[in-house]
Length: 459
Image (cartoon, rainbow, N blue to C red; front, side, top):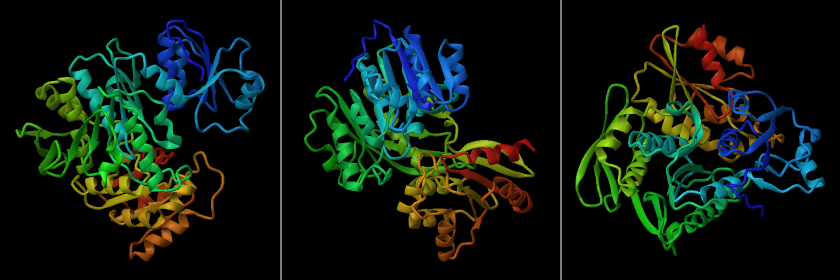
């Protein structure tokens, strides 16, 4: 594997430089004096930021984009062998790294690299921890998988020895990392286009935990089934949190205010108890907060600072994000694209002010829709009114014989009415005709369904 000497900047080319993670890594290298170029399909706010900082970006991916004086090429798991730029680096035998390998090498430059993993909640929890670190004037370097408003993007370059990043299990990417502190939020079936089954997923998380050094620490949700299989053989310290009294950090007595924001009691490892209040809804965010609190204790951050940060933290873009009002009904957008995430979001919405809850759901990828069809149907029945869009293909081209009409039929078989439209304009017209005063409309999915709510708000 090619190893970067970060004290000797080189020319690095990113295939897919506009991605949320790739753009962040490119920005970090720019700050360290590297020459950066790359390509993406179209301009975006992320690519514009990089261009302002000196990156050269090509739109459209072609072999002749690759400069003659390249030292290294970085690419993501979404890039296939038929990509013309990827084929060109093979022909030219250029040194290359995956996105995860580059991120792993960056982590080695810091004394305290922290990696947040889990099937769900990585971006929210990483952002929540970021808020605490900033409140404590820790001056961290942050790499977040979403837009975090306090830093005006997804990357912050600090001067301390703390490096905080998300760690995704897809294609085993996080096994290229070098964390000193690891967090595992939850483990469930997902990314079934890569993993064969839940056993393989759990094995991947066990290998991630095994990356931690003997003087490191694993902070793990103790409610994970058969947690001992994940922690077996680890040499590092293990800190547990969750809903069970025997865990190191245990929450209880959760109450909600009129906006659905929770206050909870927390029993700490020393047996003492304290109350914490959040400004993001849902019991899932209570669990996320416990991971953040456990990490804060590990880093020596006072609880008063943590409480202040949690009261300030209002989430990230596309995580139960308030978009505005249209004709008297409220519009929220959420990134949920897995049955567990849908359940968490709609359960949280039940505590939010509403008359009826509308959910406009855009399924994400054919493989995920097919793998979890019954679970998707069951989760969506938590909404009062359900509208489906076509499946967002993302990286896939094969439909696998599945469509949103199959999901509609599964929902209807559960006795719930469900509407399907192939066109966003038809959905917009339907909502304008049927949503009432004080209804709550949630646009949901990891694709471009967010545009629908934004258009409604702009009217």
